[in-house]
Amino acid sequence: MLTKRVIACFDVDRGRVVKGISFVNLRDAGDPVEMAAVYDHAGVDELVFLDITASHEERETVIEMVRRTADRVFIPFTVGGGLRSPDDMRRVLEAGADKIAINTAAVSDPALINAGADRFGSQCIVVAIDAKAQDDGGFEVYTHGGRRPTGMDAVAWARESAERGAGEILLTSMDTDGHQNGFALPMLRAVGEAVSIPVIASGGAGSARHMIDAVTEGGADAVLAASIFHFGTCKIPDLKAEMAAAGIPVRLERPEYPAAVPLSLEPLERPIAGGAGPAVPSLTYDANGLIAVIVQDDATGDVLMLGYMDEEAVRRTLEKGLVTFWSRSRQEYWTKGETSGNVLRLKGIRKDCDIDALLVRADPAGPTCHTGERSCFYRDIADPD
Image (cartoon, rainbow, N blue to C red; front, side, top):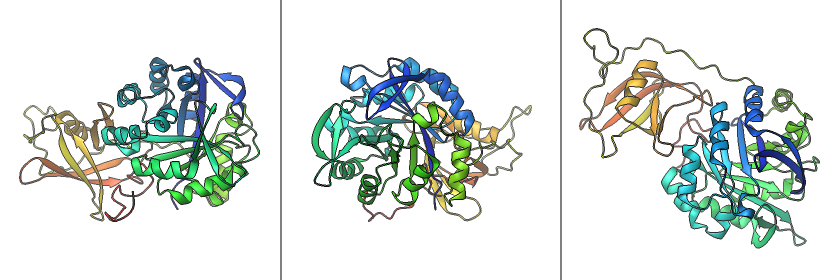
């Protein structure tokens, strides 16, 4: 069973974290930047930052606040609200977010999901769905911060979102949101059975028991809460301990990142006169200065993931002993596992016959794929998307 994530959500209105009941009667809960740092230290697995009035008031997400928040935390961070184009997504990702969440804009223009997934990768795209139960047993999608009914069925919309390239569904029940009486398990089950991508349960958490039920009865891949965390009803370490006691695999401690160890990197590394450090040999990079990198488990030979490096990323990998890539979506260097702890300890690197691709042999500290799978290549080509 894959590790289940505990996520803290920040609903933000004009720069302050707020929380209400069924999307109304909002009350102030604090400063998002300071709260983000507290949650990171407390051991929450991820954060979600939602500018809940951005779509309604046609405002852009406050990029500076996103940047400040991202600077303070070392865990995956999702940002949503007012994102209407791939360029909006790019700005948020460049500001420091790991993923973006889209709701109103995706309903208005479903092709936005395709565009985001094509440009930044499905792992960056979270489709947020706010829905209410209907008398006929269905669930209707609402947009604009829960203000506008759409007539769309939430299960069908989740399925379409996955088909268009979404990497996750953030499913919020407007009926249970803020009431702290438990998640809407029927809706959670229905959506989870309709898609093959992770589903985050949102709306109604009041106790560890509700989190446990969301996973064991609702099939959730992650559980999200706001009120019980913001107002001290539930402590994250206590919550995780109860989930673990119920047999649910969770990360109980913050990861400690391993120090670099001396490595024998034949045939890639060669001495530099004067002992200046590991040399980076001549390689054939593409027009963007990048080279494709396949990562292989040194012990089993299994292929784990595909990434990209430039010359500096190769150098950093050799120097630190931890596999480091160039992120094409965020336009920055990132060491695999720097937020999750699932680092790739370098064992060796080989170049192919044309010197335009690298094979990295590594010792993985945990699951390599962001979905929690051991390898990113866990689906057959014939499997449905």
